[in-house]
Amino acid sequence: MPSTHASDWDRDAALTTARILLEIKAVNFRPEEPYTFTSGWKSPVYIDCRKIISFPRARNRICELAVEKIGRHIGYETIEAVTGGETAGIPYAAWIADRMMAPMSYVRKKPKGFGRNAQIEGDVPEGKRTLLVEDLTTDGASKIRFAQALRDAGAICNDTFVVFFYGVFPGGQERLKEINLNLLHLATWWDVLEVCRERPYFAEGALKEVRKFLEDPTGWSKAHGGIGSVEEAKPT
Image 1 (spheres, rainbow, N blue to C red):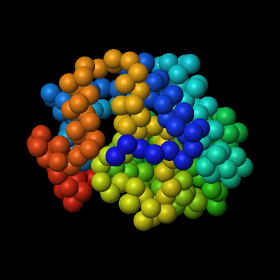
Image 2 (tube, one colour):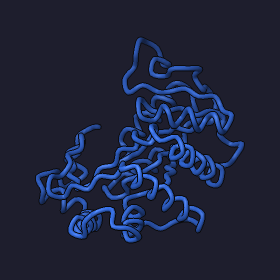
Image 3 (tube, rainbow, N blue to C red):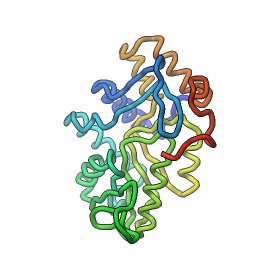
C-alpha cells in the first residue's frame, strides 16, 4: 500500500527528496532485467543514494530535510552523537553531525583489532544517545548489526536515520522494533511513484511493472527467480 506520512511536512519532504533523486538519476527502473540484492530478493528497482554526494545543492537540501526531520521526530537537543555506517553512511553522518553540532564517528562492518571498541572509529560515544546514519535500507539487517556494535561499545543507540527506505520487503520494520530501534527516513518507492505521475521520468510500462512489485514484492521476487520469504533471506 502507498506510504502514509505523519504530517504534511513529512509528505512534502518525502516528495522533495524523491524529486531530487529522480533529477540526479539516482533512481533506476529495470523490470526486464531485475536486480538481485545480497539478501536474495529480486527487484525491478534500485536506488543509488551514493550519487547524492556528487551534487552539492542536492545533498545540501537533503541534509537540511534530514536534520529537520530528526528534530521533529526525535528532538533538537536529544541526540548527543552521530555515527555513520561503513561506508555509504559516513558522508551523511558527517554532514548531519556538522549541522547538529554533534560529535561524529563511524562504525565498521567488521571489527578491526580487538576489544569492544574495535568497530568504532573516532571517539566512542559511550553513554551518549547516538543516531546511526546510513544512506538507505532495504530490510533493516545492516542497521541491526551496526546498532548492536554501538551498543556493545557502550553507546545508547535507539534511533537510525536513512535518506531512503525501500518500504516493501516484509519483516524490516518489525525486526527493528524488536530490538527497540526507531527508523526515520525521508522517502520510499511509493513517494517516487507519486512524483513520476508529475513528469514522464520512465515509460508507462516500466511504471506499471514497478507498481506490481510494490503491491506484492515477495510474489514478484519469487516469480523472477529470487527468494519469496523472509526465512530465505541471506545475511547482508
